[in-house]
Length: 110
Ligand code: FES
Image (cartoon, rainbow, N blue to C red; front, side, top):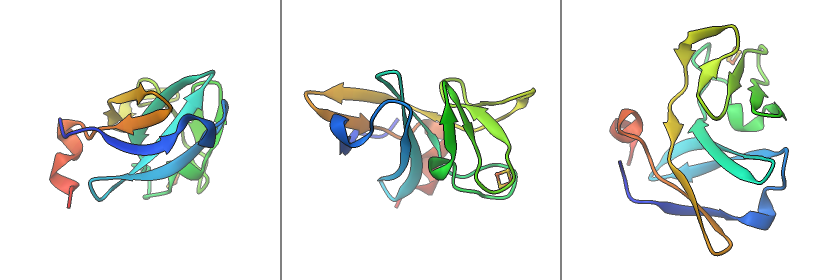
């Protein structure tokens, strides 16, 4: 796992919303689910859509390109858990939201 990087302050991502952030040169989708932050690979495994720009309903984000949906806590695709996006470690330090890259995304770092 990489070192944690500060990507936002807690007030920048209200509950029920998400955004795309950069962690060591890798695009990551960060979400606030009821005050708990989750981060997954931003790249949709269907055709590369930006999950950080998708609509969030509870723990599930819908890809803005063709509607595949993923649980942002587990990374599993709705209805087909064999398709996943990588989940990233997240922590909150003071008012800073920090994200690290998991081993499966380390090869993409710059
Ligand atoms: S690229 Fe995400 S559903 Fe097609």
